[in-house]
Length: 155
Image (spheres, rainbow, N blue to C red):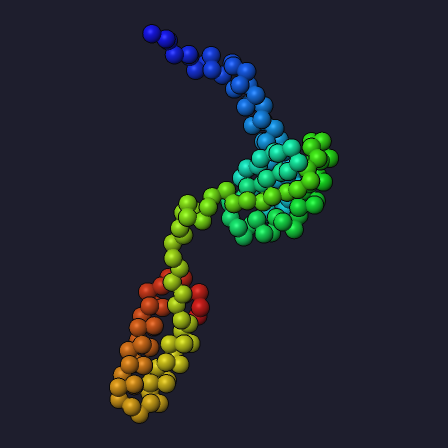
């Protein structure tokens, strides 16, 4: 029966060393690419892949990808100056497909306090009993939701 290789032995093999060199090259290029971008954009660059004539930059959302595209020529120029790699093209991709991204907590957009007041005033100036009652209930509901919401951003 064949004995398994030790983990330490695996990390000394030529194939693994080649992979480690590639990973280090990608980290170097990613670092240069991040330094070529403004800080608020660099924070969203998560990885890169170095191809013979193309740099693929992975970002954490499509919104930041569209912003980084404006810096494509500058970024490629800086990477070439710092690393010597000459890329013909820059592709910017999302690191996670939309289906795999964690969902944000839904935000409840509440009508403003002004809207609640308009509803109440409309109800008071309406002669129809059924419509008046419905507008008063809606006004009271909006006001109650606003009072329960600690943010109350739309005052």
